[in-house]
Length: 172
Image (cartoon, rainbow, N blue to C red; front, side, top):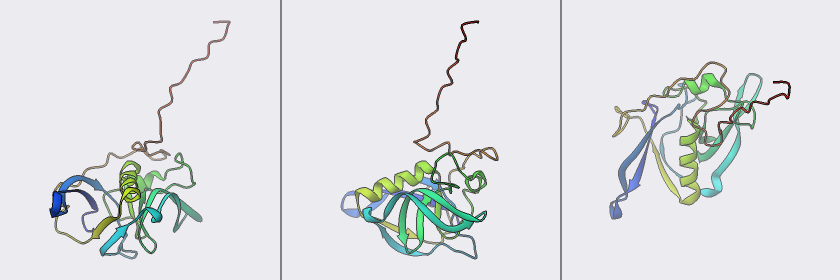
């Protein structure tokens, strides 16, 4: 929690999940709304493609993509969106990745939230949340900031760049 970093581990035979594979910058809960500590299990029946998130923002609720319930109201999920639409991202929340900014959930870039979601849908997944002096076996990745007002996550696998066709008028 202190380092706002998630590390994924791969299985090393009978030794368990001991091989570090990927580090992800995240946003854990702010000091008044801390993320829980402890060991939990993610399961398929507690994953949601989209979920309404409990923290009111700007007079309403927000939504997260690729949500995996840790325990109670605590989830891994994408940075928040104003609607259940991947073109309504809250850019300031995205730009806060890497520091405590949530109401207790663990926010991630959409691509990283999807990785955890996909793993949890495939197998029961152990999660340990703790305060450490280091970010883990890898350095915490830096997240490139997006422009204020940008409404999509550049890592979202559902955002396909659409080429702009030029429509020629017969008078050209």
